[in-house]
Length: 159
Length: 292
Ligand SMILES: Cc1cc2nc3c(=O)[nH]c(=O)nc-3n(C[C@H](O)[C@H](O)[C@H](O)COP(=O)(O)OP(=O)(O)OC[C@H]3O[C@@H](n4cnc5c(N)ncnc54)[C@H](O)[C@@H]3O)c2cc1C
Ligand code: FES
Ligand code: FES
View (tube, each protein chain N blue to C red):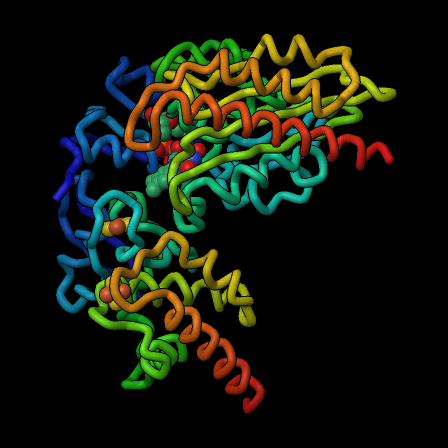
């Protein structure tokens, strides 16, 4: 079937089988391999993307189910060489090591900050409880989200 | 890489349209809601439906939590995240939030629905026990109209419900009665995992005695366990720790867990009893706090 999705504001159209999972539809698109595919069992959160702003696991969603919805992947964060504050936070606080979990972590926490610009540490931990990091440890990830929250607030005060 | 077997995909534009599609495919079609039970099953080839009818466009018909005619009515497509955030449920049946906080993780909860949870009828499903304890009734619609069934009649066997091949679960109805208190307790191996054992309890206290009670267990049998014997014991008695300990004893006797990676049988029976006692204690404390 012809599936046309809006990914990062751009229309991507391909003839795929209805059984194609969103994660593979995305990763088969040139330039969009940032979304990772880990456990394949909806447990690790590496494949998280946003659907109409809400984080979902793309390994447990059919591409066909996303027609008519806006998908955002990790590639949407950086604009014209300018990192999103959440990416900058991960950089500043050393919140990635191998980087495998990072795309999912970034999208999950970006969505958190969009909803709740000043989350408590507990709220950050709850938000990423469906995302597994096997090497950095969660302490730095929580610190990175806090960094982003603080810098975003400062940035918004400036303008 | 896990990939489902091939199937045809269509989107329903109305509940009646979805039912017509189920009828047309004569047993070869399945509804897909959140997909967070069905897609994993299809990836493992435990399910291989030939047609999928996607009902996610039916939020206008099937996603709501509303008070009407002395009941709380929950549309089948209501997602876990909305059950967790509902003030109406928090006020009348706080066991929903107890359960939702520990069902999977927030990202899964953005997709999974109450209808999908109940229709999956996995014995470890938390919402099945929750709905059994509060004596919910569910509305099932087919081509010949609607019928309403109790949770006891809804659960017909492991992964089996009263919903026919060409029917849809449309609504869950919770009775609103005075003096209600409820709670859900779960023990899991790690955050977001399925229960090793979980208990849901509801009590309706009038003038210091338990007018009615509902108790149900998850993950300690091949289906959700309705603890009828414990409910009988509680009905008409005054709430006390001793009474709850007796009900908890029944829970450990009337469950039928099997040993697996989550633990041995005696441990699960013990957990069933402890979860039941805690759920009853909290349910009763909540009922009395509401009364005060
Ligand atoms: C990693 C992970 C962890 C989880 N942990 C837990 C947990 O701890 N506790 C828990 O309770 N659950 C848990 N779940 C399950 C989760 O709650 C699912 O979302 C839920 O079981 C299924 O809901 P769904 O809407 O995704 O259903 P789907 O997967 O879309 O459907 C499930 C079944 O119900 C049928 N169906 C769906 N809607 C209807 C309808 N309206 N009428 C008729 N049939 C219908 C489908 O045909 C299918 O057979 C977990 C899931 C995952 C992926
Ligand atoms: S790959 Fe989707 S949750 Fe792990
Ligand atoms: S940085 Fe390696 S898994 Fe998280």
